Image 1: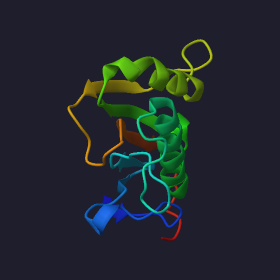
Image 2: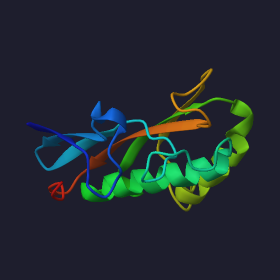
Image 3: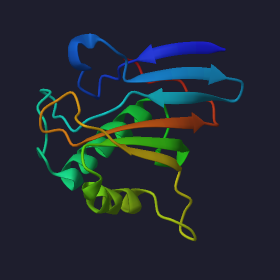
Length: 145
């Protein structure tokens, strides 16, 4: 068993370098990836689409895709999605983005999911934070970071 904490070069560095974007646990035959919560920021750390759940969801999943890609994973490898929302009234907008990425049966099988409403997130204007856990069943190594 090997644990790697990583910040892929394809994704802006975490705020204050206080955490890793992904914790990777290598196991026989694959790896478990636990991604840190992601908010919709650009490469300069500025909020994208302030107050817009759909716009922020789109950006968040772009970031998640980049982190997964750096570890040889795709959305198909996601086991669980945990979402923090400042207003559950935004669920339809967020859900539309999610359904486009993770279709329901018979086209696909979306991952397990938890969604909770919180009073606020750490960046003003952020209305969503999403973290995922993924399992890579094939042998891959993280791309150089």
